[in-house]
Each structure stands twice: as C-alpha cells, then as structure tokens.
Amino acid sequence: MSEPLLRANELTKRFVSRGPLGSKAEFVAVDGVSFDVRPGETLAVVGESGSGKSTTARMVARLTEPSAGTLEFEGEDITTAKGATLARYRANVQVVFQDPFSSLNPRHTVERILMAPLVYQGIPPTGGKRAHARELMERVGLDPGHSQRYPAQFSGGQAQRIGIARALAVHPKLVICDEAVSALDVSVQAQVIELLRRLQAESGFSYIFIAHDLAVVRQIAHRVAVMSKGRIVEQGPVESVFGDPQDPYTRTLLAAIPRINPEWDRRRREGSPR
Amino acid sequence: MSDLLVVEDLTVTFPTTRGPVDVVKDVCFTVGSDETVGIVGESGSGKSMTSLAIMGLLPRGAVTRGSIRLDGTELLGRGDKDMRRIRGNQVSMVFQDPLSSLNPYYTVGLQIEEVYRAHKGRSRKAARKVAIEALEQVGLPDPERRVDYYPHQFSGGQRQRVMIAMALVCSPALLIADEPTTALDVTVQAQILRLLADLRRESGTGMVFITHDLAVISSIATRVLVMCRGEQVEYGTAEQVFSDPRHDYTRMLLDSVPRIDDSPIDEVMS
Image: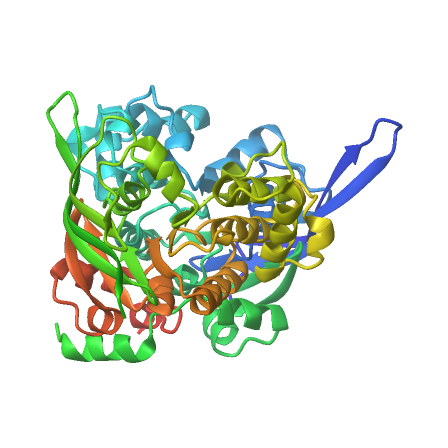
C-alpha cells in the first residue's frame, strides 16, 4: 500500500461563544477525525447538515485553524505551517466550492480568474497567459475562444468548469470539492462528475469529495467516510460502506435515499438497448 | 375519480426588451381529487411558473392564456380579491424554504390561526384549538407548548411541518408542494414525504408535487408531467414515464440520475 498523500490525525474544531457575563459556551463541530488520502484516490466525506464535513474540508485546506490534531502532507506536518511552506502546500491543495458564481470574481475575465493561482504562487504561465488559460479551458470542456468573457456570461455548469480549471492551474496533488456538484441540474451534474473522473484519470491527483448526496458519492468515490455530529462513524471502501454498512447511522442514511422504482427502472433499461 | 384541477393549454408569457418570452407553453394536465401529479424538470423548465399560475401568484407583467379550472370554476383572469378567497382555502401551497415563508416576528400558532380566521371567520379561541390540532396532525410533539414557539425555535424539518400544517388548516381541495423537501437532509426528506403522502390520503386532497428530483417523484406521484424549457415533453402515469419514456429528453434525464445501487467506478477500474 502506498504512503498516504494526506493524513489527518484527530482533527478537532471547537467554536467558543462568549456570553455577556463572561460565560462560555463551547460547540465541538469536528471531534477527533482521522483519515488518510492516498495518491490518485477519491475520499468522499458524507453527512447531513451540521455533521462537520465542511469544517473538516476547511481545516484540510488550511482555511480554518484546527483546535487540536495534526495534518500531514507527504509526511510533513503542515498543521501550523506558515509563509513559504504554507504557500507550497496551497499550490498542492486546491478547492472547488459549491457556488461557482460566488467563488468567481464577477469583474474578472475567465483568463484572469484562471491565472490568479499562478500569480499568487509566482509561477510563470506556460506559453504565456492567453495560451495557458486556453489550454486549461480546453481540458475542462470549455470553448477556449471564451477566455475574455466574464463569469455571468456562462451557465452554472460552465461556471463550475471554470472553478475546476482554476483549481487545476497550479497542478495540485489534492483537490477538495466542497459540494461541487450539489447546485447543478441533474443532467449537468452527470457531465461534471464525468469531467472530474476523467481529469483524475488523466492527471492522477486525489480528491476529497465533500457531499450530502450519497448517490453522487457512489459515482465518484473510492473510499467513503460517513460523518455524524462531528465524528466519523464509519469509513471504508465504497463497496463495503454502501453494500454492507456497519454503523446504524449509515444504514439509516442509505435507507432514506429516494430511489426510482427499481422495477420500472429495470424495464426501462431492458427496453431501451443502446 | 373526478377531475379536481384541469389545466388546458396554459401559456405564461413575459414581455422582455427582446420581445415576449413564453416561460410556459401549452401545458395540459389534470389532477384527480385523490392523486398526486408530479411536475418534474430542470431549472428554467417552467415548473414553478406553472404552480404560481394556478395560485394566481405570477409576477406582475406575466400574461396568461388557456384555462385553469378548479372544481369546474375558471381561475385564470380572476381578480386579486377572488384569488385571495381561494388561496389558503381551496388551494394552498408549500414552498421550498420554510424559513423565508414564515414570519420570524410571530409565533407559528398565530400564523396558522391567521390563515384559519381569514377564511373561516371564527374566534381566536376556536382558531387556536384548530392550530394545535393542525400541529399535532403533522406530527410535532407537544403541540400545546409549541404553538407558542417562534419559527427560529424549530429545526428545518419541523418548520416544513409547520408550513404543511398551515397549508392544510382550511382543508383545501388541492395542495401544491413546490420543492418541499429540496432544502432538507435526506433522512428528514423521507419523513416529510411520508407525512405528505399520509395526510393527502387521509384528507382526500389532490396534490401537485413539483421537484427536480426524479427519485422523489417516483416515490410519491401517480402521474408525471415532464417539462423542459416551458414545454410539456411527456405526460403519463408514473409507471409509463419511468418504465417506457417516449421522449428523448426524459430518457436523457433518467440516464443522468446518479444511482445509489450501482457504482460506475468498477467499470473504470476494470
């Protein structure tokens, strides 16, 4: 088994709110969460709202400081890394957010958006900005001729492709997708999932895929961690978590998923050979 | 089964700077008094505009053509005053986001009582009793106490139960549920779907259920209308639409639905 790319060890996040008389209330959003992400694999973190999955993602991306626990990337402790070490970590770990329109600057052209990570990293774009931006757009299935357009000129699915292209600009080893396909229509969602899988197959990076939709997770994950109330209640390969769930919460979650009547679905698939 | 709602050639047009745009085009369907008709489509398909047309709640400037008859009475072209009498009483609606549909300044009891008193003209005391019963009916524990709670004191699923209680307090003939479970967690969604199906069956209310989620439609609707860009692309029994779709768009939509029970990763790996 290969060395983990990323190792989260007992990650914990506590939020403290202070009352008027110095009283303190503590909320543990993430409670001692540990997992590994191996090179080239997709780890899905699933859970319902308030389960701590997004806070976990934010800690891994170093967007939120953990209250306790450690993060190791390629064997190096980066829990409190600063300066050049943190900058290098950020080049290796990129994030794709849920709402493409609020995570893309509306006043910047696609080219400027795609080149921003390179500017921050001080990496010169290969073949010049224009050529590099066009190449990235092509990789995610966007028309490279549209590099001078603004985010509002794209549909939701296309805008999410811009977000994905931006994440890929610095050749990351880990891409964190925080509900990256949740806001998309089902037909567009299927295309973006296909894109994410193709990019991984081409470039061999890892994903941490945060999602509430287990059916989507099943399409993309190699391993799954199920979170509830800040803890991982179950984690393992996708086939065993979905096929033979051990934890009662995982079973409840799987049972609650609406399914198309399987008999109707079978008849449709048998009736329409492609 | 009698036809409670008959929608014929419904067209909704908005004037724009580039000329009129039909957001709903020639839509026809019927809802029986004891069934759930699902309207499914992606964003911009016109499914919500169809429901707003039935409720008489279309944005200003919208032009409607065709016919919407409830129990034989034409709803299109009615004045605001008429529609106010019909809304909440004969037809009511449950929206996606219960937090923005409830007034944060008033207790839920007061808001349910308001609907009841506006239509039935009964005393506050009688209305309060009805409100408590309505909360009990939607499965909220301890309704005598909760009737005096404010919306923020409930969870998302509980708030949706409050909305359902409010929608059903006057025993409407038709309930329109527009993405009522979309904002909810999957375990809560399952509970709300069961509640809606049970209440509909017990009260004999017809229901129009609008969603983008085909799996949800499959579990609740007896008949299904598929919409795309304002047009009705398919209309039939749920069994026919899901097992033998006639239209390419419906087939594409069904093929796009991620399946919980099979994993395409295996294909990639092998």
